[in-house]
Image (cartoon, rainbow, N blue to C red):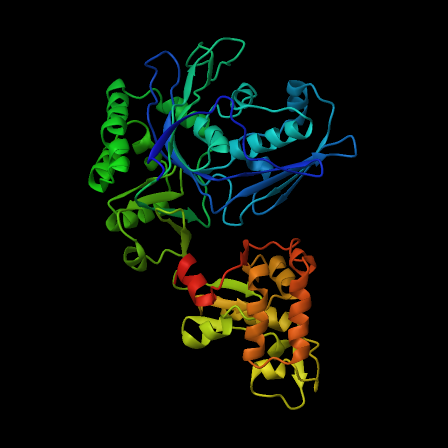
Length: 514
């Protein structure tokens, strides 16, 4: 069994690149900033160690290749504008640092739930990831201290460390350096040269549940007023800094290792009354403060992530019952358990849209839970029958029909009309439908059978009454990668391969609170 924690030196570490045909890929992650260990000037430098974690279910995928033209290009797939992030991509500065004349083509895929300036830091990870991949394409291995010298991680050593060690970590902020290896982070506060501290405590076994609440609208003061905020707020009182670090060493770390939830949250609750955390709460909107109050009514600990308005809480037990009492539709709720599994809460008035391949159990689920789920069958919208069989699966094999000229828009309208009426809506896997939903910015996920599931899909199709022609079509679609790869241009929230024996009821139970 792995130890609960491990001390890691990040100085010479490399991130987990994926290299193919001369291109370099890397997954980075939004981060939850829990609290700061020390924001004092005790040593003459600006310390900012912290506890935080990556949201591993929301990978930001960066792909970089050399450009054939003498220009750089950056394409983003998601709801983020890179120009709105705190730091701008400066390829000229990168080329100068690595002594390269290369130009780059960059593609960034970001989960649709993630927006900039919501307290889930992404600027450091995205910029750092782009620089790391671009340098790697040019044959240069950048390290964590190289990124710091280029200005990345000055305001978030947590974000910088989480590029190299995704998960939950305690990082030590900055340390004294020299003019050659370091930089003046904030000349108005200190004339000491600093670099990122390379000692990280990796929390491998976190014994409690983490609840993350991400706002669907609303932003923080980060970017626009953040520097003014910190300049007006720092330094903290030395007494606060000492107490925060004491709580980390005496209660928070032991609470995790010994699985003592009461000691863990008691120290956290004290820490958020010290240092800058009360000020971070104070600058939140009334709506964020009200949601935070609701979370604190249900959980022993809850707080603002960084400058908000994203929130988080901890629970010793499965929080399903507590979450059932919360119906906060303007926040997305995610629950991380002790094994790294993630469940998303579907509130009343919200709908989870699942575009599923045949024979994964969507019709069975909808029939079993008719008040909860709706299966929108495409043949009801795409075909006009002369004499239709009442059994949908038999009707799929009939030929006595003509194309409905209102399709696919009538299908899309049916989806939109039922949003919020059912917590789960099952969709056809047709690209024409999903492309129209993309245009209307309606989020959905796609479930697709893996190679190990193919024979079971074909057997289930026979069992439910599909004819040989339809079964042959399923066989053809699942025999190559072409059909699956055809979905890559769509703007889905998640594309998940079902390669085991699970049907829809088990999949939903494993991944959602409905």
